[in-house]
Each structure stands twice: as C-alpha cells, then as structure tokens.
Length: 106
Length: 121
Image 1: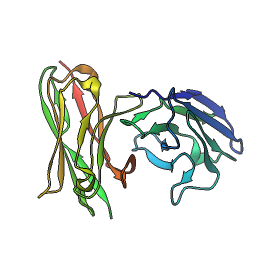
Image 2 (image 1 turned 90 degrees about the vertical axis):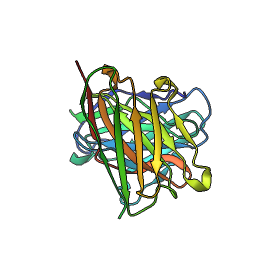
Image 3 (image 1 turned 60 degrees about the vertical axis):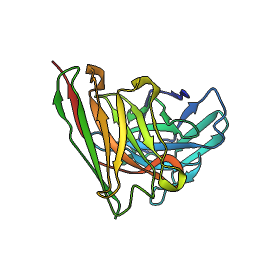
Image 4 (image 1 turned 180 degrees about the vertical axis):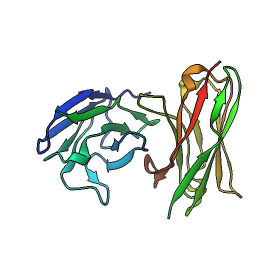
C-alpha cells in the first residue's frame, strides 16, 4: 500500500489565521489526491480532489496544490467552523489516507 | 438525492462473523464504484475494500492487511452492497462507512452515516 505521510498531526491556530497541511508519498501520485474534513461524530466531507479542484459548495478559503509526491491543503483566514480534522487520500492505487491533522483553537 | 445507509453493526465476540449492508438510493451501485471505509475509535480512516462499477468491470479488491477475512459483494436487484466480515478481531472495532466513488476515481463524495462494529469478549 502507498503510505501517505501527513503533517503536522495537530495544529493550534486562531480565527483569522492561515494554515497549511502537507501530505507526502514515496511514489508519484500525479494529482490523484483528495482532501477531507471531519468533525466529531460526523462522516468525512470531501473538500478537494485532483489535488486542487474545489468541491462544489466548499468555501474558496480552502485550496490545494501539489503533484507527484508532495501535496498541501491551505486554509486562509480560519473560521470557527474550520476547526476539525483533515485527511488526505491518494486514489491512484488502492485508496490510502494520511493519519490526519487536527486543527484546534489556540 | 444520493443516500447510502449502512446497517448490521453491533457487538460480537472475537472470532465471530458479521455482515454489514449498505442500501443505496438515488443511484445504482452498478453505475458507481463504492468503498467500505472504517475508522477505529479516535483513529484515522482506512479503506477495507472497494467495488468498481459495472462499466469499469465490477472489480472487487480488499485491503491486503485483512488477509482474506473480509469480502464485498452486491445484490444488484436490491441495490445493496454487503461487507462480510469473518474471524473478527478486537482491532476490527470501528465505524464502517459505505461511500460512493466519483466517476472512475476511488475518492468519496457521498458517505453514509456509518455503522459501529464492536468486537469484544
């Protein structure tokens, strides 16, 4: 299986801050990476696919970039509803996920 | 509206079996691929297997780490996908989600609410 190394595992931030989460793979995934947001007690929600394509209805403060082996999810001007856990997923091979990044209030 | 509803979870003892069901509405599992994804309490996400749509061959693949204990199948007439889980172990305890692919890609736009499987003696 393709291991997705996600960092950081936790992130403290304040409303209005900008944050970046990174996922790395050991082999090229081209742009076959998706990002999800999960809040406690809920199923994950798809935010982006093909590394940078924003899902309909997702605020434009979320953005993704990268290709090959390194990918980033950026959130500009964090809002209260953005405090959650974020996961990357590669889907070029058998689907695998990063370990998650919990974004909590500083 | 696309919906998936999982059922069949519960409390079982180690070594026992359980079959989960995922009923789809608003779409056909013959036309869309799907994943079974699980999440152990307080842990991350793990794909336990997927089924491709019929146009892409209907291929089924399971996570190698399961060593053949889990099997995905489908009843197309009822639009239900099953996850048969045998020889359950304590670390199979998790919420199990049924998700729908987007086109031919195995990322998930639509998720069920999940069903909790607890393996404990």
